[in-house]
Amino acid sequence: MGSLYRRYPSKELLAQRMRIAGMEQLVTQARTALAEEPDPWAALVRFFRDALTVQGTDGPLLPLVGGRLPATDEVRAAAERLRSALDDLLDRAHRAGVLRADFTSADIPLLLEHLTPRIPVAGERATALHLRYLDLVLAGLRAPGPGQPKALHGPAPQWEELRELWNAPEVGANGPAAEDGPASS
Image (cartoon, rainbow, N blue to C red; front, side):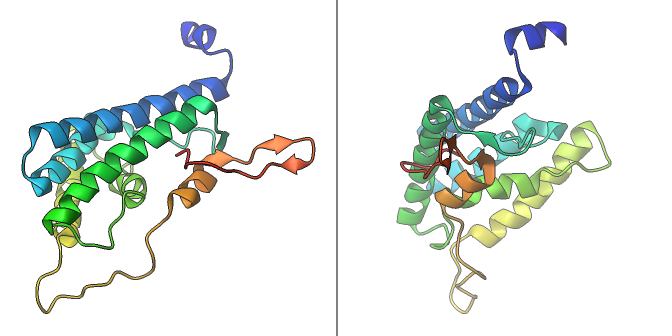
C-alpha cells in the first residue's frame, strides 16, 4: 500500500487515475466491439458483456471513489473519448434499427452502475448474476416491435448531468466556476 501512495501523493490523485483508467478501459471495449463485431446488436451486447465481465465483482469501472472530484484536463479528455466511443457504438445500433431510439450514450455509465452492485455472492456466481441481469436489460433495449410500448418513463440523462454528478464544482476566487465544454464524465 505504501508504494501506491508514493506513486500517488494524495487519495484524490489516485481516485482521478482510477476514473481515467476506467474510462479508457470502456473506450477500448467499445472500439474493440465495433471493430470485431459486424452486427450492430452483437457489438453492443459484446461491449456490455466485456464491461461487466472485466470488472467482475470489484465494482464499476467508473468508481465514485471519495465522491465528486475536480475534473482535470486529463479527466475531461478521457471523458470525451468515452463519449465519442459510446456515441459511435449506439449510432451504429440506432442506424440499424435494433436499439430503441430513446436510449443514449449517457445512459450507459449509469446503467453499468446499476448492473454492478455488490451482491452477497463471490467470484463466478456474482459475474453470472450480473450477466443474467444484463440479459434482462438487453431485452428491454431492443427496438420495440409492433404493439409494444415505445416510450420510456422520463428523459434520458444528458452528459452534462453526468459531469455534475461525478465532478466537484470548480472553485475560483469568486466561488464555483461555470463549466463549459464537453462533458467530463
